[in-house]
Image 1 (cartoon, rainbow, N blue to C red):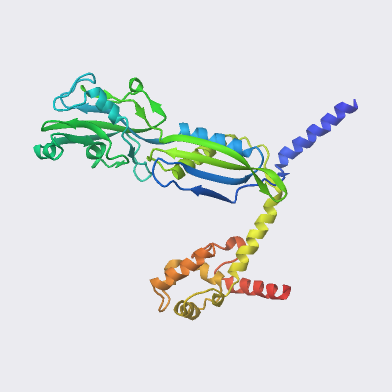
Image 2 (image 1 turned 90 degrees about the vertical axis):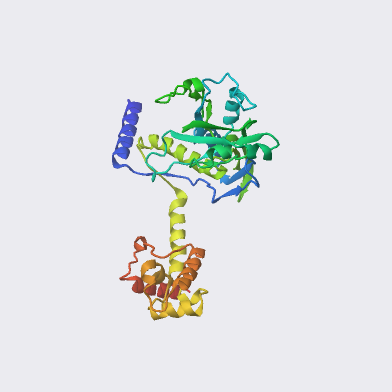
Length: 385
């Protein structure tokens, strides 16, 4: 009887907790304050990305997740089909070309094209048709000792795509000709076999090609120990990323991160309970204090040229708070205030982690009360000292 009563009380407690949506406080999680990126010296080389410190176990959790997403879910353009004039299928020789059609297709599979679709281009994700007339002249043949190598750069130089491996050979011509070649290039993920490609309005002589969309060649991750204070078993995550150049390693990381967040957000809808973390309040207070200390500085306390300082003084701007709350457009209206002074001020504010046109309402500061609030802060600061 006593056990049943205890369970009933416990059930009521959690029911009330859920109705009130009370936040549950968790202990602090160690998170990296900065991600270190060691850039590769050349395309196709390893880019090392280092994140530390992480709570024990989170190195593997994040490393494996990012690795799998980068290998399977990133998108890039690839040639999906080719149609060469007077070539009805891939199992035949082509007049005036050393390679047969099978070898030409194998070479086309290695073409690396870059064009990342954007919101500004509504149809940028659609399959794009690239038509080119290959003109092999006698002069080109003589310049090459009787042969002319047609490269990926020559075929796609005016296609709207950036060609990563421009010098990649497609075929070698041995006699003059003008031949029309039509490609269809699409954007996708992973790998799509030729027999699985289904494009509308297939041409009579159109040959589908295995499309390798994934721009990531290799991703490895390692988890090492690192020290934070007295803790010696924290995780250091090291990612080694190699791409083919259609996306950079930094792009691969940021795309994979956003894809992971997108999928985790599905489960965020089931948030029966919110949690807060022990360190949040202290960190927010510390961050607020640091910002307010910067805002309360006088213009004369930062290193500006005499001209810029005088211009601000004439505009009755005495503190950093009064400066950053001003939009850039209004600054240029000040007397004797030009672009040079504006750029100097913007650079100095950027060093301080600030900028022009900031919204300071979260600190209770508006353009109407900025002088009053900053004066009170300075008086309180002086009294405390």
